[in-house]
Image 1: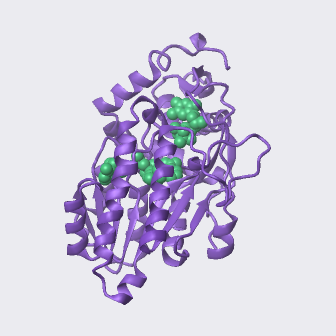
Image 2: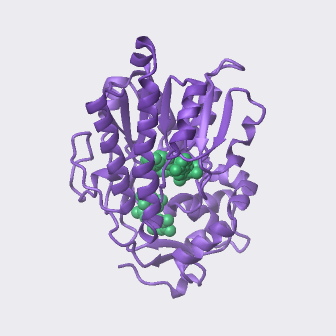
Image 3: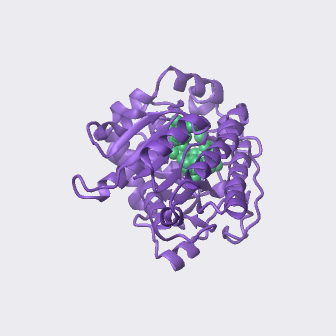
Length: 369
Ligand code: NAD
Ligand code: TYD
C-alpha cells in the first residue's frame, strides 16, 4: 500500500480517486490517506470511497511525528506521496506562518518519520521504497514574456511566502536524499484545474462567482500568464514518476498551455454563456471587474516538461479546450458540492480578500493597471 498525505485536498483527492480506480474491483493497491482537514480538505470529495476497504482515511498532521511513525509501522507502505501543504498564494500573503509550519516544518518532520521507518526495512524493501514530493513551478520565480520555459535546471527564485515555503520543502527533500540516502523524487507542476478545486483559486472562483451574479475579480491588468494542466494529467504524471522516476531527480510537469488570466476568465464566461445562458441574454463577461493587483504578483510561469516526456514517456491527455469544458461542466453538475464548501470560513475569506470589490457592480471597478 501507499501513504498519501493531503489526500482530501484538490489534487490529492483526485489522485486517490484515480489511483483506486486504476485497479479492477478489489485489486487496487490500498491507500492510507493522512489529511489534517484544514479549510482546504474536504471528505465529501472522497464520499464515493465510503465502504471501500482499499482506502483508510486518518485525520492528522504530517508534523505529528508520533502519529506518522505509528501509521508507517502499522501499514508498512512501499511509498509516501506528499501532497499536504498550505497552497494558496493570497492566503500566504495574509498569514505566512501556517505555510512555514506545514510546508517547511511539516515536511521536515514527515521526512524524519519516514527516514526512521525506512531504516527499519529489509534491504529489498528499502531499495524499492519511494518518497514522492509534490511541488510547484512557482519555486522558480517569475519569467519575462520572452524567457524560455522553466526546466529542471532553472535556479530557485521564489517570490511569495507560499513559493518560498515550497522551495524550502524541496530543498529538505533533496538534502534527505543526498545526506541520508532516502529514495526521493520531486515533481514541480504548473497550475492545475479540474473537479473538486476549492473556489478560492482563479478558475473555480470565476465559475462560482459568475453563476452567483457576482463580479469576476481580475487582479491588475489580467495579463499575468499561467501554464494550465488538467488535474488528472498531473495525477498520471505522478504515477509515472512514482513508478519509474530516477532517485534524487526532479521532474517538471506541465501541459504547454500558457494563457493570460483574462483569456482564462473570458473562456470560462464563453462556456457558461453556452452551457448556462443568462435569462436576460447578456454575457457573463459583463461581470468582469479589474481589482487591485496581488502584492509581488509573479508575471509569468511556463513549464518545459520535455524531461518527463523523454525519460518516462508521459504526455497530458487533455488539451486546454477539452479540460476547461469538462471542468465547467463538472461545476454545473455539482452545485451541491460547491454550496457545501462555501461554509462560513469560506465566506469570511472572500470578504477579507476581496473587500467590497467583488460584490459591487462591474461599472464601479478599478481600471486595469
Ligand atoms: P489544497 O490546498 O487543495 O489541499 C491541501 C490538502 O493538504 C488539504 O486537504 C489540507 O487539509 C491538507 N493539509 C494541509 N496542511 C496539512 C498538514 N499539516 N498535515 C496534513 N494535511 C494537511 O492543495 P492542492 O491544490 O491539492 O495542492 C496539493 C499539493 O500540490 C501542494 O503541495 C501544492 O503545493 C502542490 N501543487 C499545487 C498546484 C495547484 O495548481 N493547485 C500546482 C502545483 C503543485
Ligand atoms: P491562483 O489560482 O491563486 O494560482 P497561483 O497564484 O498559484 O498561480 O491564481 C492564478 C492567477 O489568477 C494568478 O495570476 C492570480 C490571478 N487571480 C485573479 O486575477 N483573481 C483572483 O480572484 C484570483 C484568486 C487569482
